Amino acid sequence: MATGVIVELQRNSPNWATVVEDIVKLERKIFPKHESLARSFDAELRKKNSGLLYREVDGEIAGYVMYSWPSSLYASITKLAVRDACRKQGYGEALLTAAIQKCRTRNVQRITLHVDPLRTPAVNIYKKLGFKIDNLIEGYYSSDRNAYRMYLDFDASQ
Image 1 (cartoon, rainbow, N blue to C red):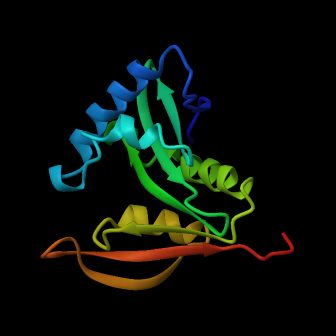
Image 2: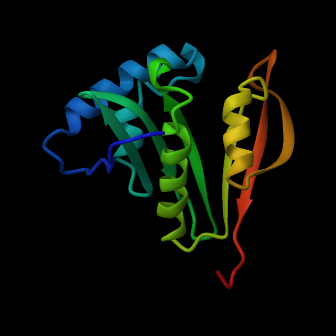
């Protein structure tokens, strides 16, 4: 099972540049160029309504999750990524759970995300944590790659 502490990247953190650089390297390894936020990662993180949680293992970033809350009604999981060597150890689920909790502190009613249906482990984690498939969006990533739009709703009384 995943060990270690999930850390929230703070905008004024002295290690901001180092963490962002490490995450950009991981981003480039995991995602195809047209899906990668590597070029705009720093700018995305500096937006007022965004956040990033990460976990280090043995001095390296094991994984990260980026989220945003564009309105008071919903939040979005923008990226969830785990280093190949750290997969199937609970890191992705732990990061996603922490991001859901962060989004909940904003009192949003829904969290949305997009995921390639062929990324079965990711789809399974999302489903395990309560996300439901809303729609299949054809050509979302590229002309031959689709995406599920998934959502997690919260009861207003929760």
